[in-house]
Length: 228
Length: 243
Image 1 (spheres, rainbow over the protein chains, first blue to last red):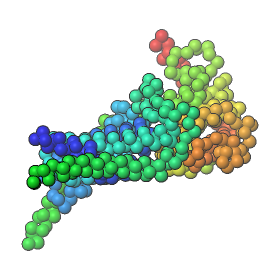
Image 2: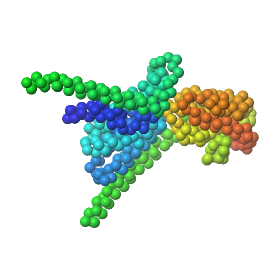
Image 3: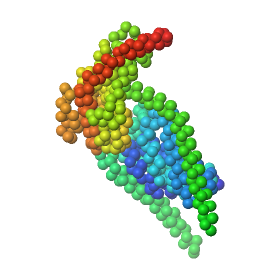
């Protein structure tokens, strides 16, 4: 069983990473990753919604006839997102000011529906919640990384806007990576998002190929000896 | 055969309806219990905004026990003038103007304006104008501009909006109320011109509105004199109680 959980985690964070492997939910990935803080904030909010929607759908999965599963899932996700949106607005107003514009985006993020459909609809509660959260986290990693890259190239800073999430005290953690930087507009504009994501995908593929090659060649090195 | 089809279909439909009902009921419930805190925090946020664009403390006299012999019979939140839909302010439904008085004369007004030509959706603005026609401050109330690009009009993402402080049509002639790209006086950030263009235009139009309607705003106060005094007495009473 613990192997099962381990597989869910490695799948979500590496093998089936929603950001750089499945390439699902590209709209928010490309739109909001202008800074690391933006990317991470949306990423974590998405992870919460995914855990909640997976956790809601999994217990009722046997009640839902397969013909109407998609509308029911969308209904569940939309209701959950609205509830989270209203609750944050009511009880954590400052956070809502930062995340408010992103939260409605989560409804249309197809990674949420994809995980509900392909995992929560077939699995029990605990693995489903774990899968939703880890998939969201895998996406948040990519969003944060992409946001960080674009921020450094585009503005020369890192973690700007942190004070909006954690209060004015967090302003000291904003790093000026390149002092007196005049900005590189391409990185901030949408093309920068595509280029950055493309590079991340390439990097991940390169790492994956190198990994498999290594195991392959070591296996090849052993095989003849065994065969002889 | 058709019986099983009907059975199956109606079963599916009932499930769908049941989920819709539960979802709607849940949403209605959450909406109800969050409405009050949301309204409250929005009102607080609005007061904080008022103080940012019109810092003079005496316009907020009802908020604390002030000296009773103060000259100011003004209270920003008591003198609310309703303004019918107006092309210059861009409001399609009646909006509010909050008037601050001093010696029974208009001292400053906070207008709500809407710019319809933002990059995505309406930009709602609060604009504080003093009696002499100079701007005390401008803030963005709500917008849907691109995060990280057009959102620098919001004070949370930049100081751009402070460019308007102390501006007026006397300092900057009306034809120069444009972003620099269009030959005007106002700076903007490369990559997002549409957003500041819309804001500059809306602020300029609000100034025009103020010039045209100054009298109306002032007169609407004259009507209120009677009730004003009563209100003042009431607030005197309250503050006395608190003391």
